[in-house]
Amino acid sequence: MTLVGDTMQLNAVGRGGVMQLAERYTGNVVAMRDVHRFKDPDYAAYTIRLRERTPANAERLAGELFDRGMVRHWDSDEATVNAIAAAWMEHPDTTISTVTNRQADEVNRAIQRLRLDAGQLGDERCASMIDGQEIHVGDIVMTRRNDNHIGVANRQTFAVLGIDERSGMLVGDGKRTYRLPAEYVAEAVQLGYASTTYGAQGVTSGHAIFYAAEGASGADAYVALTRGKTGNQVFMTAGGDEDARDTLTRIIARDKADKGLEAAANNLREQIGQMAEPVDAGLNAEESSELRDLDRWLHGRKAGLLQGADRRAWASEPLPELYAEIEREQRRAGELSERIRDMRDQYETARIRAEHVEDDYRDRMRELSDKCGAALDAAAARLERDMADDWRDVHRLLERHHEDETERLRLTDRNEPGYRGFVMGRRRLAGEAAERANQSLMRYQAARAEFEDRWHIGYGEYRSSHELRAALARSRAEETPAVTDLRDRMRDLEHEREHDSEISAPERLRARVQELGHEYEEVLRANADRRSMAV
Image (cartoon, rainbow, N blue to C red):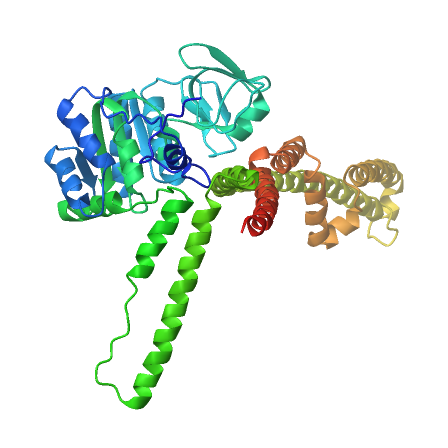
């Protein structure tokens, strides 16, 4: 078995130092010093110096990057992200390395926007639950979970060749194609134009960009700036050249590498050895006594720490099988820890996306509600007008009947002067007036019955109660097609919101994080028991 690796790149996931242990316990070690990746031999030599970085030479290494013109900076994160996206559009073979997943998401979105504006992406699309971003045909995506059945690995990148919401996504890497199921796409596929330095480690491309920021380490810089064969650049947010140089110096000087338990123990010994000894500077008796007590405590503390360091070094000896099991479980704990961190980032992104989706639903519901209210008011007003017109028609018939009845009574009034002189003529006129009064009465009664049957309100009630008229019109307006159609659309929208996977995604991710957290704690507890046995 041959082990190949670079101990100055990023840590292993979990307990590191495996390469150092292998080098210590075997005599067959070959150190490869020749660099073949870069076209510029001077830059190849610089990468060797960057590999052998120390806090003492960090400032000089940062200065060399500036002297080579490899560092560019802007005064805001937004401007930096836009510049990185524009550089990718110019050189699509660029590997972009970031410090955090959030930075990678921002760069991914910026590049996708530029590609959409340029017409480089297709109309077919689907949603990723990881970063909440829509993925289009033509996008570069990254898988975030190993799946032996599909044949893909974590942090593998592909171009999207086709999308079907039911069957999933067709992707390719230039050598072969893969069909990713819809469920896997939703849970484990995200945009892949940029990734953290862990995702970039092992990649070779034409160009590379390191999005440098506080929190990065020398290993991040070393990995990110050794990806591009033709060109490597540092993009960062800074207040000026001096600020950028200071930040880059701190990054290169920072060492997060995990070089194993033995290296950690040696480092602890060095730090203990540097602990200051008490100094007697002309103290009085009481102060001298306190200083001697402190001196005894300090020596006891140093002895305890050194004993612990020696115990850690002894535990690193690969003699018992128990140690190998501890190492395996440490790696497993590290993998779980990374998955938890990734899931938390996914949860935060999904939570923000869910809030945006909720806001969109609220806006759409508010728009439909406003339309429904307006339609209801308009229908109620129209019905009130129709009801009023019908009531006036009935009222006119009643007034006509009153006129006919008045005329009949006048013609049949025996006390009216001249009644006796015109008995025969008035009798005929009175009969005609009585007939007209009867007919107008029947028309009025028929119209009133029709009005009350149509509007379900009495003729007299309509006249005496404005509130009753308005309530009746509004109740009838609720049943009009314009209003019921909008009510149905509101119910459909609410049903869609209740079943929207993007809204429920944060809770599912939260539950998954909790499950992984419980599993992580169990691994730590079990490993603590094994360590107590080893010690």
